[in-house]
Length: 253
Ligand SMILES: [Zn+2]
Image: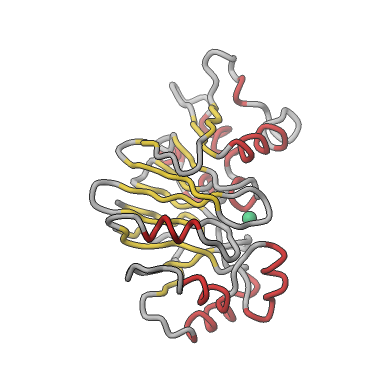
């Protein structure tokens, strides 16, 4: 399984894109940086996107991805999310105010956008990859995703504070090769992390005790303003298999 990091930051400054992971060139987990990271030729291959939650740093390139490719012959995009997240995208994003409702354009019969509701923990398959959504603990309804092919599985928590079910499911996943989770704020901002449903390096250390498999853990979600401090505090945890994700890099699992 190939996972390219299109963006891995919890905010945007030049050179720092927001959360989006591209699996095997065709399926994206979150869309904080799809149209910003991929050429038009590459974008047209991305036909399926799983959205973890409604926050803009995970969804903001969806409108432009569709707009860019709207007129390509046969182009259509399928977006998968739990019902609460689909409802939010219908009501607040593709609502004919913020952006056109592409679920009925060019017409109701052959729309370029399909919003597909998924059931937490029920596996579904896209292009030979199996996905499961799992609820995590953020301030809006949010799921992480576990992605599996025949040889490897990777758990992506998406945005979360301290949580349990995600760790239970990755621990029970055969062939788990890596976990991707978040660290948004430095330790000095623990209170803000608590009220916004995010992790600091100190809170991450507690979370990692719940992981029972000896696999590498990759981090994303850093607020650009605090990147240096987060990097230092993660290093100070002294965990050998703990890494910050690198934007633009392709990881093979
Ligand atoms: Zn969020």
